[in-house]
Amino acid sequence: MLVRIALGAIALAIATTLAIPGAVAKYPEKTITFIIPYKPGGGFDTYVRALAPIMEKRLGVTVVPKNIPGAGGRKGATHLYKSKPDGYRISIMNLPGKAIAAIQGKKGVGYDIRKFTWLGQIASDSYVIAVAGKSKIKSIADLKKLGRVIKTAGTGKGATSYVVSQIAANILGLKVKLVTGYKGSSGMSIAVIRGDTDIAFFAYRSYSKFAKSGDLRAIAALDEKGAAMLGKPGLSKLRIHRLVAAPPGLPSGIKKTLEDALFASINDAGFKKWAKKARRPLAALKGKASEKLIDELVMFYTGHKDKFK
Image (cartoon, rainbow, N blue to C red; front, side):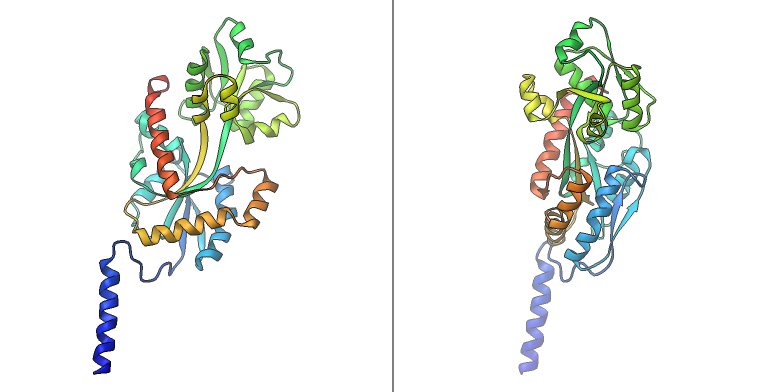
């Protein structure tokens, strides 16, 4: 009699677990792949490789970084989107880059940005408008006084910096011409220092490397404080966000486990110490706040798509 009661209780527990949406009997049980949709060595790669060992301790399983480069990050994003929603594949994401690619109608966009399961944000970085250290241009007003089209350096028309330059120029009432072909922020900085272009739009961390030597000088910051000083608060929307996503349809129990582990890892004392030493900004957000951010970014960039499409 007691055996039948015990077996019945076990069966009821199993049935109850299976009946609860998102319930997880045991997770995780095996290696989690942390996708980096870019080549090794960049900022996104650096964050993941520093974060993965800390997440391992929280989750109790191996977390392996895996680079899936191609199509400006769209190949890796599409791979994640089509992966099984079992919690064993997650990816760092560049926003607004992934949203912009969809808005532009670029080839290789095999995902709906709003349907990913968003686990949280690792970091966020604002932009600055920079000139050569020896330039006589001191402000946006000085740029306007030039009375001509302003040349700005960029890597290409598909880059986030290009989109940022077009939207910011429109908001500020500047006429700009993009000069492309430069490789990364280093190439763009050389273009400005050499005088090939008047300005360039840099993520703050990239700019700070060259500002320290005096080679570049910011004439405007596009963070909340700087945008307010310019009387254009909308400029503060122009940021680089480093978020983490899982495939669409991830069960709620698994989502909570990953979300909590990610948030705790970003706030880990060791990770914060690494970020400070590496001069990598942190801005931790949980899943719900990240979802809200995605909606805001999609609305903002869709509203400006005529400026860069």
